[in-house]
Length: 451
Image (cartoon, rainbow, N blue to C red):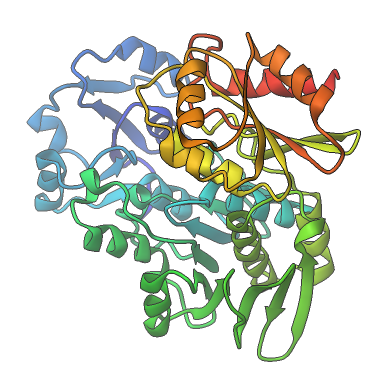
């Protein structure tokens, strides 16, 4: 579709909607912004888009006469496709795109796309580094924080776009066709939006909808849904596994990641050479490496990039090593379930700093996941006594109470021995002592680096 002079409704006034409207204005379309929030500050929206003259913004109600003049609708990811208003667009015969479809249609170059329930951000960031180290023009976009639409017009024919794609964004794809795609895993999530697990799976699998036989889809062999899905898709299937050897695929064999194709078997990297700890991260490395391999990146370049890569900030992020002690920042572990991943990723005795704002969580499952790894639990914040009492009841490890994070870091540094780790993975929100988990993680890194 030639967008010039077309009247396009952008449904949603958040970051994605603003990015879409800005892109539409630059290609000569006439964007109109609508938001279901009747209390929307229309002037604030107009102020964000100063280059679009006479911008129309509607809130709460979209006049029928405006809807009847539209040529296209672009939905922000947060807008469900089963809303009565969205259904009325389809009934009217209007094309309904999402921001990914809009960006894909206006962008250029090759696209590598990643979806899945968990691990998307780390895998996208890692693949972004691999491609940036190997190619001149690379864009890392999508759910990772940079709207795809905000970069589309900067792309050239030789550009590579690495995109993190959510299920919400996949609902509205029409022609979106990545050269290499990946579905990392599918576990129960977003059922308030998709209503059934079957629908959630169907939407995730739309990432291969327009791929061709020469394209590749990387799938998790240990996910039974994806293992079956890979048997009957148009693009070539390439599996990864952290549990078994594969005749063709990329897999973990002891402490070695092996990439095996029809033609060659390549020892890619030893896990000890990675700065990403934990089996779930080895899976992220395998998925990103396989995608890069099929995007044409030389093996040596892939190996160099994955060995240099450190975790996404605040997510089991390698900070530094001092006096033989390795420090990790997992401030994003803001609840017990998230913090379980942090301790599971540790492969050495660990001094664990935890505690914070009390969200009335139960800590038993998290404490029982320690499996003897935790040398001492160093507790701060509002929950420190509550967690200590639970740890003593379960008899999992010694506990030490500290007044604040700085004191906790100093105590760990004074007591941890070479070969051990210090991990900040609080299992609690940051409020009370910090504004957010980012500030908490930043302060942890500051205290560690000033030791």
